[in-house]
Image (cartoon, rainbow, N blue to C red):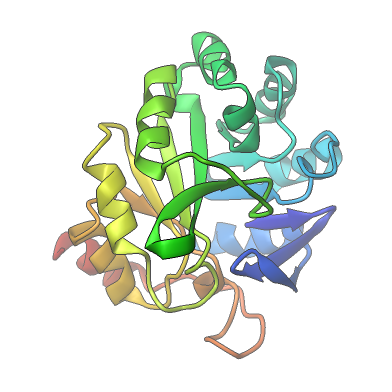
Length: 246
């Protein structure tokens, strides 16, 4: 789930922010739908060089029944400690990890590897290559996604949230080639993100991309592509069958 200030939003290719609603009301709906886990990402905190919105995070943690993770504006152990003390089980590092990879190790030494997700945003560049992008899709780096994934694993990341910027919000499916290139290179769990539009996309990410989990955005906040907001979750039995039969 993407946050701007105290509002829940959804993007397309990290642009065109669409307003979804109040995060607290959305959490209540997801509680009833028995969603497995929620990840909240403040997509402007780092670029605006500000701290996380601790007030809204406290409200989310107090309302939420499932495990929680949060990313955005976490650039020190002290900030991570505040997030954990609120009640979040995991923190998500992205640009901060690129600028200071040792921060991964620093937090892992205190809270364990399982508490750290490193988010890797990837975009196609000239001549068909793919590079890691920082600052919520705004700044290109010279980092190769596979090499960077190996590095964050070596620094102590417990999971990788792998996002294709080109696919994000499109409903056209995950970048399976990107997923497989990273899952083949690391041993830690990789979470697929960016592009899910139906259960077949989830099945493809798991069976062909070899990911350990998938993250859903548009699929669970809109009625369908091009239609209005409707917070939902795939039918539990169909979802379990999809994963089981991959």
